[in-house]
Image (cartoon, rainbow, N blue to C red; front, top):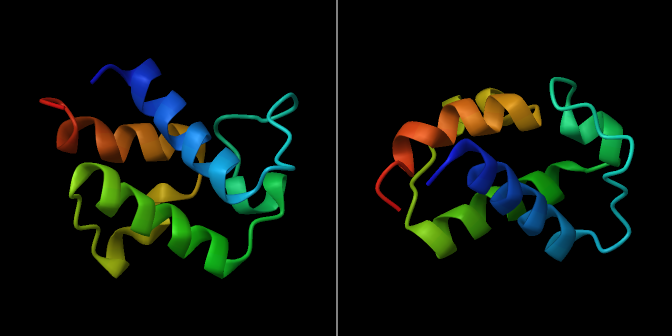
Length: 83
């Protein structure tokens, strides 16, 4: 999976969770939770959807690495390289 595909995957999951999410002004290196007003349950839904769609086990201690869109891509890229 390419970096752009991973970015699209994350945005698609967020759109499924929050149909009012506005990606127009999204800054990829800023925290997603702040920009999209995601709460902790929304964040867990993102992690669970990654698990469901791609069988990824993301340990809780790695959650901070999923803070921004860029950091999500950086974290997920090696895990999804063969997807």
